[in-house]
Length: 415
Image (tube, rainbow, N blue to C red; front, side, top):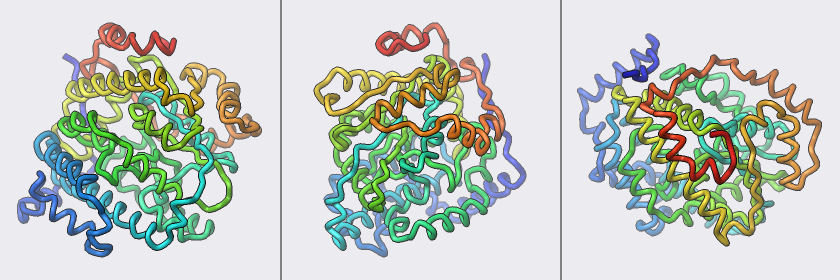
């Protein structure tokens, strides 16, 4: 049986993990998970801004407890992973409190109008990141970077020059994720200066599909599938309103995690232009499994490739079924939906990009120059090649094609 093997840790990373495990041995209470530590994390999150900013507990407490319970029962987390899980929850709750404080201080923020955004979605590894970061070079569009997503209130107080200096300062520092797991740079490059998925700024209701990507959270993902994301997308809109600088630039967003929640996306942003990328289904699921197995290996020493493959297959099916249900529902009426094939993006990028601009109702720029600039700045394999096989993740290609035929037949992509 072929099994996925986690990337070898560098000596620097080994020292960091060893120090964390030593700290856990010395202070095990600090490394607890489960619903019983929820109050402790709430106190950390609201110590500066006040618990009243969290609002109705029914909007966030159930998600917090489910997340912590799943991290404890399902996560198989190492000491670094436990601290990451705790810090992620604290960060989301703190952002929720600051959003409330921002709106109370300036109620006009909630009245800011937003041009319907362009939102890139699709399965994992379908070219969404390439297209997103390519289009982000168009000065008429605005693609958020990590600082803007993690702390929009802070970015909103900066001038454009101050923001760029802050991003540059961060970019000169070692990337914490890449220090722990250098392989991530080849699988999915990231950094302060690179436009990033808006899912990084989501989760203030503790409902976020992204959580289950970086950690093994099967119980949380099952709970999440039955949740209403309306309040989460309201918060997403608030985030963009806080960041709005009055320049009139149109928001360009990207997150595969929008794929199962398109009805909420369309109702939150009437007129949204949804660009849905599609790729051979085996490549999509296997590459996604490789991405998340690698990501999870940052926070766990017990990542089973076949287990990740099972999760990816199940979640992909769930997401694609919900995306197709949306297309056939009245909720899709206010949206423009453009389907793109990954093969076209690779073979004819200029033509494919032109289709995006046409769908969005924007005159295209000099796409050839855009492509040349992007390739020079971010060559496709500049950080190494991403190598994987379906078998490493227990994926039978023929069985997967049969299982996903409902989707591949509907969108006429590669089988």
